[in-house]
Image 1 (cartoon, rainbow, N blue to C red):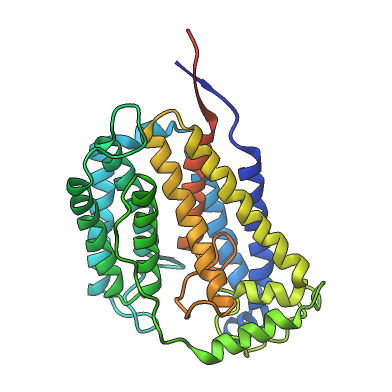
Image 2 (cartoon, helix red, strand yellow):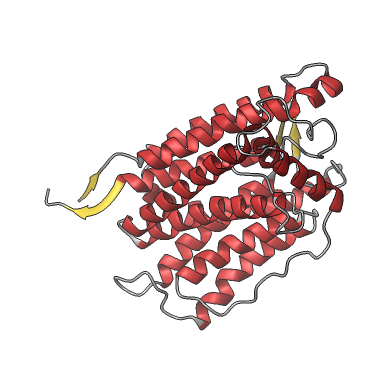
Length: 342
């Protein structure tokens, strides 16, 4: 019998703080654009808050659902193949922003490629546990684990590339490689970064970051978001944050993501079984790697990829998936792995 503890408070507080800060920055970065395009300064904020509500409900539901129930093969494979079908289905719909990425359902748009991240994590956590040595976090057979593990992952990543969405497909591969690396699989190819970037976006992003100084120009006072910086409320929201809240605000956000990664890895190491370890590891890698990619783009260390900043960028599907995954992670953190006699 396993003793059930409280969910990790540090992880919970970091997540909620990032979400609230994200909502504030979405409004700050999008108010003018929303008023010009929709006649309502709160257009993007209200949609973000709607998805935040959905995501929080999902997160709390997962906190109270024992994560071990997610390891059922029928559940894992059904979810994986449903997402796979959705990724195929988007190609039969009209393009939006020159890509096949979204299912539009009234005021709500669903992006299957975001669901694909959790599908990959769930599938690999289940599959790698089957391949583990007894009482070990490593896999039994390197040669016979890599091919079946990566076949379905690359199939899913390939469909995402065809949308086209290079950034999310890269994120899917990074998640898989992070999980496989820690499981003992060291020999992999490393995806090369796209050498072509958008110089204008990068220049405006760096101007925004550099203009903030130590304490920033003040909330709602960004100049770069005034149609100079494209996608200010989505992919480049960290640049607006650094301009308005300065080095101090930017450093605090980095600290929150560091806390998330620290507590996520702690939950993985302390999980009572290999499924929980792999599941927690995958979710942590998903959030941490996506944050690193986004920050790398904003700071000019990587070419633009179209990857949102977890919990903070405007985007309902991404926010919902991140909160759903965090709910699972918080549930795992409740399981101490310490056996007690009943």
